[in-house]
Image (cartoon, rainbow, N blue to C red):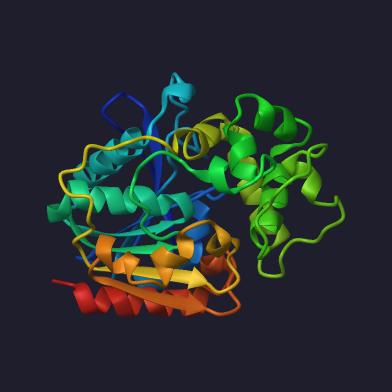
Length: 313
């Protein structure tokens, strides 16, 4: 981990973003994290890619980890994340990169490839396929206790999370998202109540890992993390073409709870997926959960490296 270097980059609206980097190869890969993840969630992949001759870069989104909180978190949009990514590429003099996005990080990776196809060699997503933008329909298919619906409600998650320190919140979400069932609370429960206090961490996630995550979220809080992604899922983009044209690779854990979301099976296994992403490959890691890149790093690293090797220009 000491090999990974850290820097602070200014972006267009005078915010400072924390960027982690390793490697000096000609070909660069930029990693986009999910929630409750952070740049650190890519530690295994960054080191493996640097050892294979790539330049690996990961950053904390605005309002996450060591990056500045935006002055108005409730007004943060996906477009800010896309703009920040463009600023980082410009600041690091990277004309063209591969993008690797996990969880909701898949969305800006795919959208950036549509908006800036000349800057993207290919996209790898983990845990979430490309979902065309549009109004969120979760409320039509899932009960009120569905965690995303709860976290979209202003003040609800803040009160729920506020009962615990940041490390405990991260621990509980990691436990919940490592299961194969969608987290859904009863009417008289909050989402944090779905985890018993004595529930152990997943075997592949150490107390040291948890301490690092906890410290980063202690620094940033969860306000921006609730806005992006959960309270901005309905944001609509005026895309020149809603189809992802660059080569794309989806890695899913076979036990990922997201596979039970309405419509996701069609976007991962069905022909409908090729309508939106014609150059798509899909691989399932049978025992993988939603954190497949931390759970099975060696397997994921090989899959990513094989994809990169096929599409280097």
